[in-house]
Amino acid sequence: MTPIPIILLAAGQSSRMGNEDKLLQVVDGQPLLRRAAQIAQRAAPVIVALPPSPHPRYETLDGLDLCKAEIQDAKEGMNASLRGALAHVSPGAPAAMVLLADLPDITSEDLKAVLSSVQSHPDKLIWRGATETGKPGHPVVFNRSLFGQLERLSGDQGAQSVVRACSDKIHLQPLPGLNALLDLDTPEEWAAWRAKRAI
Image 1 (tube, rainbow, N blue to C red):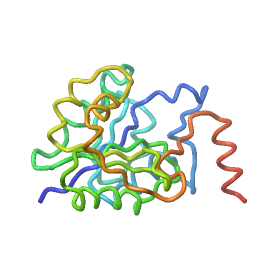
Image 2: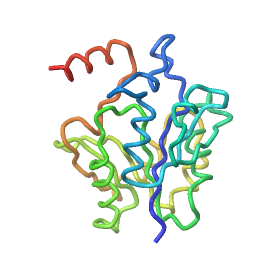
Image 3: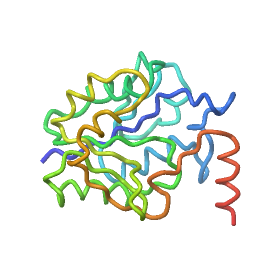
Image 4: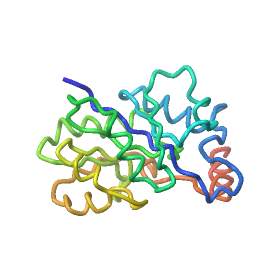
């Protein structure tokens, strides 16, 4: 069976970081984007949605065996990335996982757990990571039957409308701590996360 690919969303402008690119912040000795791609690669094939080239994020991924999806209309927002990346999903894939590139605590084991829940809960259409207490987060796997709806979305709201319409067809997979929720959008959030990690 064709594996479920991971769509890594990395075409955003990280505007809340001022003059810095949050996806190029160094974590564990390498840029966050490269680290995120490698974590994803250990779980499934990876498609990375990227801003129009030339852009430093491309070089960050040099040497990795993944698909780079150039999103020409990336400034539109997250849904442009979804549309562009879905075009690269293999026709035989039964679903696709959508993963934000700025989740610093997510692990390959977390991604594998959510992917495994697709097999263990085949009656659902959406499978997503959650906190240990059940608060929905990331990543999110969408059944292929929802691709058409995702491709019709526009703007920067993500797939929230599709998720809401399938509220009775969602499986929440608990992940450790805040792995499914913690993203870092501002220099202050980065500083706090680094300080806590150093303890």
